[in-house]
Image 1 (cartoon, rainbow, N blue to C red):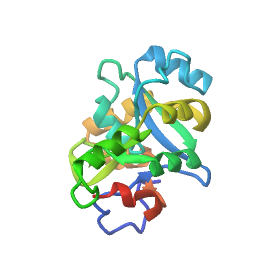
Image 2 (image 1 turned 180 degrees about the vertical axis):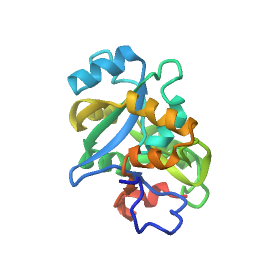
Image 3 (image 1 turned 30 degrees about the vertical axis):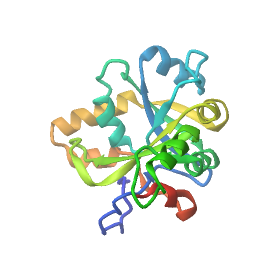
Image 4 (image 1 turned 60 degrees about the vertical axis):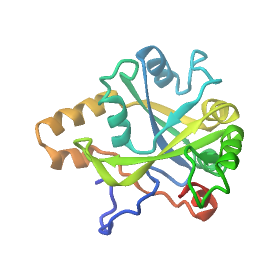
Length: 206
């Protein structure tokens, strides 16, 4: 199954959440050092060593995660996790998020944006999506930063399963280097547009 829908021929909107999801869950990706990532995958939950008082960033885009972690080669990001979380939690995070940068016309003023950013338990960045060679694409992909109560909820309430997908990432990377792109498409997660209406994204789309 390709990561895009068969009839998805139009260019994606500039900002769009694309994800692997079910009726009740959505999959996001993170990369950690083995001492955090491996115990998390074995237990299906984040260990006590995972700091719940720090901001953590989750990405619904597998290829953006590969760009960020260098196909699991960057120091401290050698273990790639697919974290399945509840859609209820994911949407709570979106509703309570603030855009990570000031946008004229979206925020009344820079002072108002800074105040909202300080108060928000989550924040959103829109970064260029990546192709299998990790080149930037014209449309953007969601990054969702969780801190405080949101980080705690993510680790202890929203997480349904944690899977180590490091070997899958490395296998895909090998195929990309060998130009086996047809095979690569069949191995990528089947990400499709997430049904996020204005109630979820209007305050996050400049």
